[in-house]
Image 1: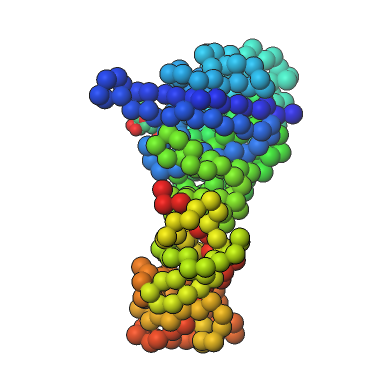
Image 2: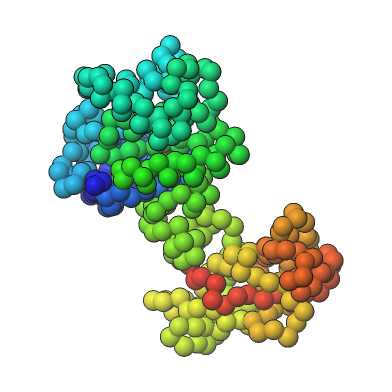
Length: 362
Ligand code: ADP
Ligand code: MG
């Protein structure tokens, strides 16, 4: 069950001569059968272009795309059996929900009663059976997008492709639908490629994520791998918030270094394969704590500002030789809160050594 997608040295160049831009730039990737795979990256990085080449709407400049080892690079879209869901739901306004979902089955000349049965099943999968006879303009945005998903699923595609399907919805609805879409995709067993610029969507839904920049893959991994072990500054900054500190390794073992900044020294993991004089370290706000002092791995600093948000507080601390350091505190002023400094107070700042990640400066 599920189709493997292999992409080899795929290139798409738009325009020619001095105006030529590589929207997808020599990209190689394997998406496993049944995977819910995310293409994540800033606007213009080539996500839609890549998705449309997988669908067959855009002809690659060079390279190959194969489904289960079978070359489909230049096959027409209707020869690939892919289902597509767009940001704009693209439902037919004059047709009912059931009519919209049945559309792909009519094209394929699927007769009744199989057709009605499959429409019902697809609507049930997205919990929209009760709306079968409504018109799209009688539905909310979230409901319309669920119908669009049912319409893509009903043809039993080998590959399901979604391009920013939640971008038109408000924040609350986006959150609700994340779970639903993930559940529907995983239950179907269909290999799914999902495009988004929203890192929270990718982290919360994906089996694996490819983070793209300028048509190239910067890193591929599970959400946890990408968030916890970014290889580059770009990946660390794109997924969540982080502090990037330049520090000098002064001594160390195979695995750990003592790092020096102007304010003092702290321990962290060693960056493998480099003897650079300065290392760039990514330290997430939640991997830093305000302390009373005396704890290991602390540096002196000064509290600049605190934003109280109820369940968390965001502190900004000055540490000599570092950019302003962001700290996220859970349960601020609660029983786990060690100190309650005011802006201007001297503070001790602990870096959790195991959560420091040396990254390449790209
Ligand atoms: P994303 O979906 O990640 O926002 P796109 O794949 O839409 O990015 O676009 C990638 C790059 O290719 C952008 O620089 C965009 O301007 C360019 N591009 C996309 N489609 C075309 C086109 N039909 N003609 C020329 N340039 C295009
Ligand atoms: Mg796009």
